[in-house]
Amino acid sequence: AHSFNSATPFAKINSLSTALLRRTTSNSSLLIGSITNSFSSPIIPIGVASGFMSSRDNNKQDNKVPTHRHRPPAKAKVPPPVAKPYTDADGVVYPSKKAWKKAVKDAKYEVQKLEKRKKEKEEKGRKREERERLQKKKEDGETEEEKKMREERQREAAKQRQKRIADLKEDRRLKADSAFKITIDCGFEADMVSKERLSLAKQIIHCHAYNKRQENPVRLDVACLEEECETRDALKKMDGFPGAWGLFGDTPAIEKEGAVYLTADSDNVIEELDASKNYIIGGIVDRNRLKNFAIDRAKTLNVQHGRLPINEHLEMTATKVLTVNHVFEILCRRRDVGWGDALLNTLPERKKAVGVDGVEEVFEKEEKKI
Image (tube, rainbow, N blue to C red; front, side):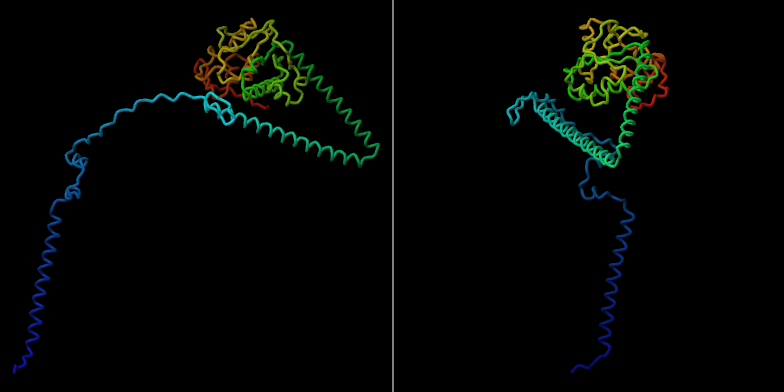
């Protein structure tokens, strides 16, 4: 039999607690020591520690300039492929696929143009019918006496209008007798495409509108304009062409007597304008595509040729080939001012023209009301 000793359990607990405390203290000392060593040791990049540092980082460490990669040799330029003939689904052969696409685009444009004209014609017809309906409704409610008075007023107004137009034409004709004559040669219709012909018609309309606003207009003629052509069709859309335009002639041929053909390709510089001359402007809208056509035309007609003194009065980097309406305006302005003022006040800003003395354009452009 063993005697019970109450101190034995408590002694075991104390010994275990003491061992545990010593172990904990030892681990804490190791942890604190490791942290202290980490702060005192130099910082090492991760790449070096791991052994995967790149060559660029090594160069930076050694303060060396990084080496450039070797450039591959330049590839040889391959010549563009030669355009091959292209045949569409209908069997039509074109010089290239690009030419076929352009032909398709032009055909689509023509169809759209015809549809647009048809819609405009239908709209005009609808408006005319509406006016007639309203007029008929108004006339139905009139008495015979009121109807006679209305018809009399209409006849009197028509007479007054015709007299006013005749007086205006006569006054303009008398003012233009002392001025020179300008003719637009439309003999290049076959050498231009549809867009260029329509652009020429617009330029002729601009010339007529500018001449109409002048106190002293000039005689403006259009020569060699065919009876059935796209330019004439576009001009016919303007009211009264050509008879009611006034100071506007439509001649089949160019009058060679006193004619001077204006072309930028000529070596003859026009210094002064002569009232007895007929200055001819080539009706060409070619985007600088038809080279020397105007001077060749002058040689064919056996008439004098000359150019405007642009180089002598202006400095400009843009092309010196001007539109028809710009040449017309310059000739009209030259009667009142010098060449420099006439050129600078007419040329558009995109030409970036300056005077020969380096002074930029300071003249106020006339507001166009066309």
